[in-house]
Amino acid sequence: MQSLQEKASEWSGVNRSDAFAIDEANLYEKLGLQTFINLSTNFYNRVYDDEEDWFKKFFANSKKEDAIQNQYEFFVQRMGGPPLFSQRRGHPALIARHRPFPVTHQAAERWLDHMKRALDSTMEIDESSRFKMMNFFRHTAFFLVAGNELKNPKQGFACKHAAAKPAAA
Ligand code: HEM
Image 1 (cartoon, rainbow, N blue to C red):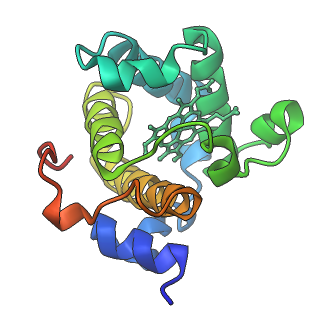
Image 2: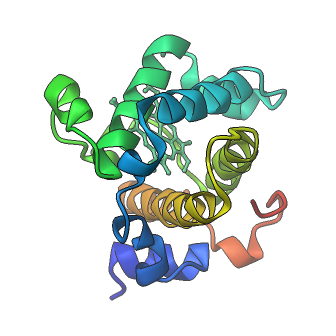
């Protein structure tokens, strides 16, 4: 049986070494805290303005400011900075934290589309960091899809055959 990581690689098209190239250099030291705040602010401004209701509804029970803070503190911690997320929220346990949400292939592509646009509009992030971060996000998004399918195997569908799959990020 395929592991969640193997499924994530297959569905995202990002292999493990590319996904974890974020660990080759300390992106937090390179980019600084404010850049991560700006990225998550850009991302959630887009998400909360999404014209696709089915996607926006995922976030209906979260305040935008809290969602921004949760996200950038995780990114900072994961990309070489202080453990801000764990100090405030505990273990990241991303699959468990996404359990309330139907993280389908389509939802992952929508999330990634917002994130790609957010990265492109955060000018402080250089090309090489953007590339590494996008690979990490893409792999992690499909890792969450794989986790979601464990919860309800019938809900998921193979990405390559998805009827309503939006353009890849
Ligand atoms: C695949 C599509 C995804 C969907 C639909 C999704 C959805 C959500 C939702 C609805 C929340 C709650 C917002 C909040 O209150 O903080 C959330 C939180 C979060 N997500 Fe995602 N997410 C996705 C992908 C990702 C990815 C790829 C990452 C990491 C690279 C990530 C990291 C987080 C973190 C750290 C939190 C905060 C958890 C907490 O503090 O409890 N998510 N996500």
